[in-house]
Image (cartoon, rainbow, N blue to C red):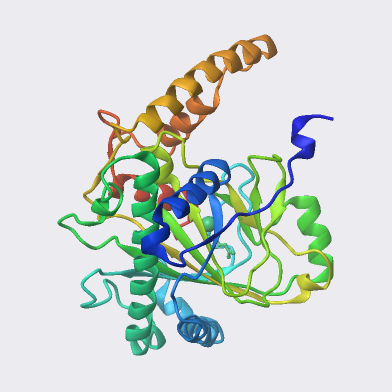
Length: 363
Ligand SMILES: O=C(O)CCC(=O)C(=O)O
Ligand SMILES: [Fe+2]
Protein backbone atom coordinates (compact mmCIF):
# COMPACT_ATOMS: atom_id res chain seq x y z
CA UNK A 1 0.00 0.00 0.00
CA UNK A 2 1.37 3.44 -0.89
CA UNK A 3 1.90 5.81 2.08
CA UNK A 4 -0.76 8.16 0.69
CA UNK A 5 -3.36 5.44 0.96
CA UNK A 6 -3.00 5.23 4.73
CA UNK A 7 -3.25 8.97 5.38
CA UNK A 8 -6.73 9.84 6.56
CA UNK A 9 -7.90 13.29 5.68
CA UNK A 10 -9.05 15.42 8.61
CA UNK A 11 -9.08 19.15 9.17
CA UNK A 12 -7.38 19.80 12.52
CA UNK A 13 -9.37 21.45 15.27
CA UNK A 14 -7.62 24.12 17.30
CA UNK A 15 -8.90 25.67 20.51
CA UNK A 16 -8.03 29.14 21.81
CA UNK A 17 -9.13 28.15 25.33
CA UNK A 18 -6.76 29.43 28.05
CA UNK A 19 -4.89 31.34 25.39
CA UNK A 20 -2.38 33.01 27.72
CA UNK A 21 -1.23 29.83 29.45
CA UNK A 22 -1.43 27.50 26.44
CA UNK A 23 0.26 29.66 23.80
CA UNK A 24 3.07 27.24 23.06
CA UNK A 25 0.73 24.26 22.80
CA UNK A 26 -1.64 26.15 20.51
CA UNK A 27 1.29 27.29 18.38
CA UNK A 28 2.46 23.68 18.03
CA UNK A 29 -1.05 22.64 16.92
CA UNK A 30 -1.13 25.51 14.44
CA UNK A 31 2.23 24.49 13.03
CA UNK A 32 0.90 21.05 12.14
CA UNK A 33 -2.32 22.50 10.68
CA UNK A 34 -0.81 25.33 8.65
CA UNK A 35 2.28 23.50 7.41
CA UNK A 36 0.34 20.31 6.73
CA UNK A 37 -2.96 21.46 5.20
CA UNK A 38 -3.34 25.23 5.48
CA UNK A 39 -6.87 24.91 6.91
CA UNK A 40 -8.16 24.43 10.45
CA UNK A 41 -11.32 24.67 12.53
CA UNK A 42 -11.09 27.15 15.37
CA UNK A 43 -13.15 26.65 18.53
CA UNK A 44 -13.28 28.72 21.73
CA UNK A 45 -12.61 31.72 19.49
CA UNK A 46 -14.69 34.15 21.52
CA UNK A 47 -16.89 35.52 18.70
CA UNK A 48 -20.48 35.45 20.02
CA UNK A 49 -22.81 33.20 18.04
CA UNK A 50 -25.50 35.95 18.11
CA UNK A 51 -23.18 38.25 16.20
CA UNK A 52 -22.57 35.58 13.56
CA UNK A 53 -26.33 34.85 13.35
CA UNK A 54 -27.09 38.55 12.90
CA UNK A 55 -24.56 38.78 10.07
CA UNK A 56 -26.21 35.84 8.30
CA UNK A 57 -29.66 37.41 8.75
CA UNK A 58 -28.36 40.59 7.13
CA UNK A 59 -26.74 38.67 4.31
CA UNK A 60 -29.95 36.75 3.53
CA UNK A 61 -31.97 39.96 3.61
CA UNK A 62 -29.63 41.48 1.05
CA UNK A 63 -29.63 38.51 -1.32
CA UNK A 64 -33.47 38.52 -1.17
CA UNK A 65 -33.49 42.04 -2.64
CA UNK A 66 -34.56 42.41 -6.30
CA UNK A 67 -31.70 41.96 -8.73
CA UNK A 68 -31.95 45.54 -10.02
CA UNK A 69 -31.44 46.85 -6.48
CA UNK A 70 -28.38 44.66 -5.96
CA UNK A 71 -26.96 45.58 -9.35
CA UNK A 72 -26.91 49.26 -8.44
CA UNK A 73 -23.77 48.45 -6.46
CA UNK A 74 -21.95 46.24 -8.96
CA UNK A 75 -18.44 45.21 -8.04
CA UNK A 76 -15.73 47.04 -9.97
CA UNK A 77 -11.93 46.99 -10.02
CA UNK A 78 -11.83 48.19 -6.40
CA UNK A 79 -13.27 44.79 -5.44
CA UNK A 80 -16.25 46.21 -3.54
CA UNK A 81 -19.95 45.66 -3.98
CA UNK A 82 -22.15 43.11 -5.67
CA UNK A 83 -20.85 40.30 -7.85
CA UNK A 84 -23.77 38.70 -9.73
CA UNK A 85 -24.13 35.10 -10.86
CA UNK A 86 -21.36 34.23 -13.30
CA UNK A 87 -19.56 37.49 -12.56
CA UNK A 88 -16.43 35.86 -11.21
CA UNK A 89 -14.25 33.17 -12.75
CA UNK A 90 -12.12 31.87 -9.93
CA UNK A 91 -10.95 28.75 -11.67
CA UNK A 92 -8.31 30.11 -14.02
CA UNK A 93 -7.51 26.75 -15.53
CA UNK A 94 -10.97 25.74 -16.61
CA UNK A 95 -12.36 29.29 -16.93
CA UNK A 96 -15.84 28.27 -15.85
CA UNK A 97 -17.88 31.13 -14.30
CA UNK A 98 -18.99 30.67 -10.70
CA UNK A 99 -22.69 30.07 -10.07
CA UNK A 100 -22.87 32.19 -6.94
CA UNK A 101 -23.58 35.77 -5.95
CA UNK A 102 -21.54 37.72 -3.46
CA UNK A 103 -21.18 41.14 -1.87
CA UNK A 104 -17.84 42.60 -0.73
CA UNK A 105 -17.30 45.39 1.76
CA UNK A 106 -13.83 46.66 2.44
CA UNK A 107 -13.42 47.62 6.08
CA UNK A 108 -11.57 50.63 7.34
CA UNK A 109 -9.58 49.96 10.49
CA UNK A 110 -10.58 53.22 12.16
CA UNK A 111 -14.26 52.33 11.79
CA UNK A 112 -15.00 55.77 10.45
CA UNK A 113 -16.77 54.90 7.24
CA UNK A 114 -17.12 52.45 4.43
CA UNK A 115 -14.70 53.26 1.65
CA UNK A 116 -17.31 53.08 -1.14
CA UNK A 117 -21.02 53.72 -1.52
CA UNK A 118 -22.91 50.61 -0.47
CA UNK A 119 -26.43 49.18 -0.61
CA UNK A 120 -28.71 50.87 2.00
CA UNK A 121 -29.08 47.62 3.97
CA UNK A 122 -25.35 47.41 4.58
CA UNK A 123 -25.23 51.11 5.41
CA UNK A 124 -28.01 50.63 7.93
CA UNK A 125 -26.16 47.76 9.58
CA UNK A 126 -22.73 49.34 9.40
CA UNK A 127 -22.15 48.98 13.13
CA UNK A 128 -22.95 45.29 13.01
CA UNK A 129 -20.51 44.75 10.14
CA UNK A 130 -17.85 46.69 11.99
CA UNK A 131 -18.35 44.69 15.17
CA UNK A 132 -18.21 41.53 13.12
CA UNK A 133 -15.03 42.66 11.35
CA UNK A 134 -13.37 43.80 14.58
CA UNK A 135 -13.98 40.48 16.28
CA UNK A 136 -12.73 38.55 13.27
CA UNK A 137 -9.59 40.76 13.24
CA UNK A 138 -9.02 40.05 16.95
CA UNK A 139 -8.98 36.34 16.21
CA UNK A 140 -6.76 36.81 13.17
CA UNK A 141 -4.22 38.87 15.14
CA UNK A 142 -4.06 36.15 17.82
CA UNK A 143 -3.40 33.49 15.19
CA UNK A 144 -0.78 35.67 13.50
CA UNK A 145 1.10 36.11 16.77
CA UNK A 146 1.13 32.36 17.24
CA UNK A 147 2.33 31.78 13.69
CA UNK A 148 5.24 34.10 14.43
CA UNK A 149 5.93 32.08 17.58
CA UNK A 150 6.10 28.92 15.44
CA UNK A 151 8.71 30.55 13.22
CA UNK A 152 10.61 32.03 16.15
CA UNK A 153 10.48 35.55 14.68
CA UNK A 154 9.27 38.72 16.47
CA UNK A 155 5.69 38.26 17.62
CA UNK A 156 4.40 41.20 15.57
CA UNK A 157 5.96 40.00 12.28
CA UNK A 158 2.59 39.38 10.58
CA UNK A 159 0.50 41.76 12.67
CA UNK A 160 2.78 44.66 11.79
CA UNK A 161 1.88 44.21 8.11
CA UNK A 162 -1.39 45.86 9.12
CA UNK A 163 0.11 48.98 10.64
CA UNK A 164 0.99 50.93 7.49
CA UNK A 165 0.10 54.45 6.51
CA UNK A 166 -2.71 53.78 4.09
CA UNK A 167 -4.83 51.82 6.53
CA UNK A 168 -7.58 50.85 4.11
CA UNK A 169 -6.93 47.22 3.26
CA UNK A 170 -7.59 45.65 6.55
CA UNK A 171 -10.38 43.20 6.06
CA UNK A 172 -13.01 42.42 3.48
CA UNK A 173 -16.44 41.25 4.58
CA UNK A 174 -17.79 39.00 1.82
CA UNK A 175 -21.27 37.56 1.97
CA UNK A 176 -21.87 34.62 -0.38
CA UNK A 177 -24.99 32.90 -1.63
CA UNK A 178 -25.20 29.66 -3.59
CA UNK A 179 -28.73 28.77 -4.68
CA UNK A 180 -29.87 25.13 -4.74
CA UNK A 181 -28.55 23.03 -7.60
CA UNK A 182 -31.20 21.73 -9.99
CA UNK A 183 -31.14 18.01 -10.72
CA UNK A 184 -30.22 18.41 -14.40
CA UNK A 185 -27.64 21.02 -13.42
CA UNK A 186 -25.81 18.47 -11.29
CA UNK A 187 -25.22 16.25 -14.28
CA UNK A 188 -24.04 19.27 -16.19
CA UNK A 189 -21.84 20.40 -13.32
CA UNK A 190 -20.18 17.05 -13.09
CA UNK A 191 -19.70 16.73 -16.84
CA UNK A 192 -18.72 20.26 -17.72
CA UNK A 193 -17.11 21.22 -14.49
CA UNK A 194 -19.50 24.09 -13.71
CA UNK A 195 -18.87 24.69 -10.11
CA UNK A 196 -20.41 26.87 -7.37
CA UNK A 197 -17.12 28.61 -6.67
CA UNK A 198 -14.09 27.70 -8.78
CA UNK A 199 -10.81 26.32 -7.45
CA UNK A 200 -8.67 29.11 -6.03
CA UNK A 201 -6.44 30.11 -3.17
CA UNK A 202 -7.27 33.25 -1.20
CA UNK A 203 -5.32 36.42 -1.96
CA UNK A 204 -4.70 37.94 1.46
CA UNK A 205 -3.02 36.77 4.66
CA UNK A 206 -5.59 34.70 6.58
CA UNK A 207 -9.25 34.05 5.79
CA UNK A 208 -11.94 33.37 8.37
CA UNK A 209 -14.90 31.49 6.93
CA UNK A 210 -18.27 31.49 8.67
CA UNK A 211 -20.83 28.91 7.66
CA UNK A 212 -24.22 28.07 9.13
CA UNK A 213 -23.95 25.29 11.74
CA UNK A 214 -26.50 23.11 9.95
CA UNK A 215 -25.63 24.36 6.46
CA UNK A 216 -25.27 22.04 3.46
CA UNK A 217 -21.98 20.54 2.32
CA UNK A 218 -20.20 22.56 -0.34
CA UNK A 219 -16.63 23.50 0.50
CA UNK A 220 -13.81 21.24 -0.63
CA UNK A 221 -10.02 21.52 -0.31
CA UNK A 222 -7.47 19.91 -2.55
CA UNK A 223 -5.73 18.06 0.23
CA UNK A 224 -1.93 18.13 0.06
CA UNK A 225 -2.05 14.86 2.00
CA UNK A 226 -4.36 12.81 -0.19
CA UNK A 227 -4.12 14.92 -3.37
CA UNK A 228 -7.91 14.64 -3.68
CA UNK A 229 -10.81 17.09 -3.33
CA UNK A 230 -12.06 16.54 0.22
CA UNK A 231 -15.31 17.85 1.73
CA UNK A 232 -15.12 20.23 4.66
CA UNK A 233 -18.41 20.15 6.58
CA UNK A 234 -19.49 22.98 8.89
CA UNK A 235 -18.82 22.31 12.49
CA UNK A 236 -21.18 23.94 15.02
CA UNK A 237 -19.34 26.53 17.08
CA UNK A 238 -16.22 26.41 14.92
CA UNK A 239 -14.81 28.93 12.46
CA UNK A 240 -12.81 27.72 9.51
CA UNK A 241 -9.52 29.50 8.99
CA UNK A 242 -7.14 29.18 6.09
CA UNK A 243 -3.71 30.48 5.24
CA UNK A 244 -3.79 32.73 2.17
CA UNK A 245 -1.28 33.68 -0.53
CA UNK A 246 0.56 36.49 1.25
CA UNK A 247 1.54 34.29 4.19
CA UNK A 248 2.48 31.45 1.87
CA UNK A 249 4.74 33.82 -0.03
CA UNK A 250 6.25 35.34 3.10
CA UNK A 251 7.06 31.90 4.48
CA UNK A 252 8.32 30.62 1.12
CA UNK A 253 5.68 27.91 1.03
CA UNK A 254 6.09 26.71 4.64
CA UNK A 255 2.51 27.67 5.52
CA UNK A 256 0.23 26.53 2.73
CA UNK A 257 -2.32 28.60 0.84
CA UNK A 258 -4.34 25.61 -0.25
CA UNK A 259 -6.64 25.40 -3.27
CA UNK A 260 -10.31 25.14 -2.38
CA UNK A 261 -13.68 25.40 -4.15
CA UNK A 262 -17.40 25.03 -3.57
CA UNK A 263 -18.91 22.05 -5.38
CA UNK A 264 -22.48 20.74 -5.71
CA UNK A 265 -23.09 18.62 -2.63
CA UNK A 266 -23.82 14.94 -2.88
CA UNK A 267 -27.33 13.71 -2.00
CA UNK A 268 -30.14 15.89 -0.67
CA UNK A 269 -27.77 18.69 0.40
CA UNK A 270 -27.51 19.80 -3.21
CA UNK A 271 -31.14 20.96 -3.04
CA UNK A 272 -30.29 23.25 -0.13
CA UNK A 273 -29.28 26.85 -0.41
CA UNK A 274 -25.84 27.67 0.94
CA UNK A 275 -24.84 30.91 2.61
CA UNK A 276 -21.37 31.67 3.85
CA UNK A 277 -19.43 34.72 4.96
CA UNK A 278 -15.73 34.99 4.27
CA UNK A 279 -13.66 37.56 6.10
CA UNK A 280 -10.45 38.19 4.15
CA UNK A 281 -7.56 40.04 5.72
CA UNK A 282 -5.26 42.15 3.63
CA UNK A 283 -2.56 44.51 4.86
CA UNK A 284 -2.55 48.17 3.87
CA UNK A 285 -2.08 48.69 0.17
CA UNK A 286 1.37 50.21 0.43
CA UNK A 287 2.83 47.40 2.53
CA UNK A 288 5.65 45.53 0.85
CA UNK A 289 5.36 41.80 1.24
CA UNK A 290 8.50 39.75 0.99
CA UNK A 291 9.92 36.51 2.34
CA UNK A 292 10.64 36.57 6.08
CA UNK A 293 14.30 36.42 7.06
CA UNK A 294 15.84 35.25 10.32
CA UNK A 295 13.74 32.17 11.00
CA UNK A 296 15.75 28.98 11.47
CA UNK A 297 12.57 26.99 10.91
CA UNK A 298 12.06 28.63 7.52
CA UNK A 299 15.71 28.38 6.55
CA UNK A 300 15.73 24.68 7.39
CA UNK A 301 12.56 24.22 5.42
CA UNK A 302 14.01 26.08 2.43
CA UNK A 303 17.11 23.90 2.59
CA UNK A 304 15.12 20.68 2.84
CA UNK A 305 12.87 21.93 0.09
CA UNK A 306 15.85 22.72 -2.13
CA UNK A 307 17.19 19.21 -1.60
CA UNK A 308 13.79 17.71 -2.26
CA UNK A 309 13.34 19.95 -5.28
CA UNK A 310 16.65 18.81 -6.68
CA UNK A 311 15.56 15.22 -6.39
CA UNK A 312 12.14 16.05 -7.74
CA UNK A 313 13.77 17.82 -10.67
CA UNK A 314 15.81 14.75 -11.47
CA UNK A 315 12.69 12.63 -11.41
CA UNK A 316 10.73 15.15 -13.44
CA UNK A 317 13.54 15.53 -15.96
CA UNK A 318 13.34 11.83 -16.50
CA UNK A 319 9.60 12.36 -17.10
CA UNK A 320 10.13 15.44 -19.31
CA UNK A 321 8.68 18.10 -16.95
CA UNK A 322 11.00 20.39 -15.05
CA UNK A 323 8.93 22.46 -12.58
CA UNK A 324 9.32 21.78 -8.87
CA UNK A 325 6.98 22.76 -6.07
CA UNK A 326 8.97 25.88 -5.13
CA UNK A 327 9.35 26.89 -8.76
CA UNK A 328 5.61 26.43 -9.11
CA UNK A 329 4.90 28.85 -6.25
CA UNK A 330 7.25 31.47 -7.71
CA UNK A 331 5.87 30.93 -11.19
CA UNK A 332 2.33 31.33 -9.89
CA UNK A 333 3.25 34.67 -8.34
CA UNK A 334 5.03 35.90 -11.43
CA UNK A 335 2.32 34.71 -13.79
CA UNK A 336 -0.32 36.64 -11.87
CA UNK A 337 1.03 39.82 -13.49
CA UNK A 338 3.39 40.79 -10.73
CA UNK A 339 5.96 42.55 -12.90
CA UNK A 340 6.79 44.79 -9.98
CA UNK A 341 8.32 41.97 -8.00
CA UNK A 342 11.59 43.61 -6.96
CA UNK A 343 14.13 42.30 -4.47
CA UNK A 344 11.71 39.52 -3.73
CA UNK A 345 9.06 42.04 -2.65
CA UNK A 346 5.79 43.32 -4.07
CA UNK A 347 3.21 45.75 -2.74
CA UNK A 348 -0.08 44.42 -1.43
CA UNK A 349 -1.82 46.74 -3.90
CA UNK A 350 -0.05 45.18 -6.91
CA UNK A 351 -0.66 41.67 -5.66
CA UNK A 352 -4.34 42.00 -4.75
CA UNK A 353 -5.12 44.02 -7.88
CA UNK A 354 -3.49 41.44 -10.11
CA UNK A 355 -5.61 38.74 -8.49
CA UNK A 356 -8.82 40.78 -8.66
CA UNK A 357 -8.26 41.73 -12.31
CA UNK A 358 -7.45 38.12 -13.06
CA UNK A 359 -10.67 36.67 -11.66
CA UNK A 360 -13.47 39.05 -12.65
CA UNK A 361 -14.84 39.89 -16.06
CA UNK A 362 -15.43 43.60 -15.63
CA UNK A 363 -17.95 45.06 -18.02
O1 LIG B 1 -18.38 29.83 0.40
C1 LIG B 1 -17.44 29.16 0.79
O2 LIG B 1 -17.59 28.22 1.55
C2 LIG B 1 -16.04 29.46 0.35
C3 LIG B 1 -15.88 30.78 -0.32
C4 LIG B 1 -14.47 31.07 -0.69
O3 LIG B 1 -13.62 30.23 -0.69
C5 LIG B 1 -14.08 32.45 -1.06
O4 LIG B 1 -14.97 33.29 -1.26
O5 LIG B 1 -12.87 32.71 -1.15
FE1 LIG C 1 -11.64 31.14 -0.83
